[in-house]
Length: 84
Image 1 (cartoon, helix red, strand yellow):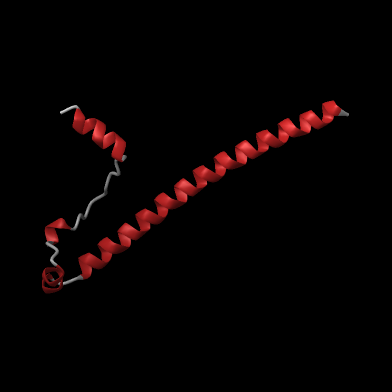
Image 2 (cartoon, helix red, strand yellow):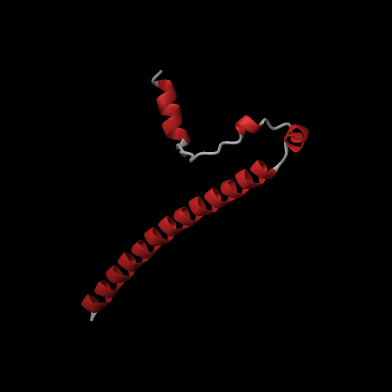
């Protein structure tokens, strides 16, 4: 009987660990997708503005990046900058 209970407890811990891991990875992916969609929406709106509207907002059209972006982790960037 105690053998069955200890096996159930171990199985429960394994299940909880797997669920927590999958949940954190899903949350991360959702957050990245959300950030990407928000940036794409912002770039689309900025591209639709006229030169006068952009200058009123203090934005230079050359600052609106049209191509793909690469996201770099802050820790990685600080490590790379320290190597200079």
